[in-house]
Length: 108
Length: 126
Image (cartoon, rainbow over all chains, first blue to last red; front, side):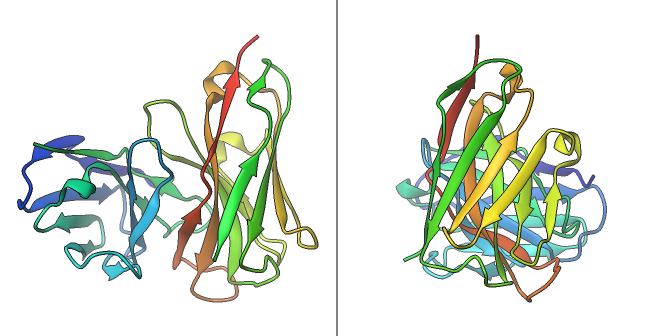
């Protein structure tokens, strides 16, 4: 099973800041990596797929990069509605999908 | 508009079997690029993928749950059913279904979940 490790597990940032969340895979997964946002009490929503492709309707302040084992989700110009928990997901092992442990983003 | 909605019991007893239904609308389960995945989230914890199904009879289950989990599909009623046997308190979680999209009409590493259902909370307790 491919393990996905996210860091940090939580962070606090001010409105307008740029934050970066990293996700590391236990083996190379090429670019088969998705990012989801989960607001408190709500279901997750898709932000990016293919490591860097923005899902329709997602603000352009969200961006993704990386390939192989190391990936980054960057949120530029952080907005109050961006608080919540962010998860990465690998789909390289297409029959054994796994999520990272999540990164909780708090707005200062 | 694509929607998914989970339904089932709120409370189950240890050793009992859990059956959850995911009712979908706005897309066809017969589309080979679109299936359904089940995911759960224990209170305060991370997401855990449970398994998926496509109309092409493709199924996959999380390694730790292969002996307890069955996912089936009824395309005529646009429903996907999750059955989990021998429930335990550690299975207490919010259970989500999500549309599982893939880039091609067959097994693919390019896949993602969008959208998700609202989730249904299941508590396992005697």
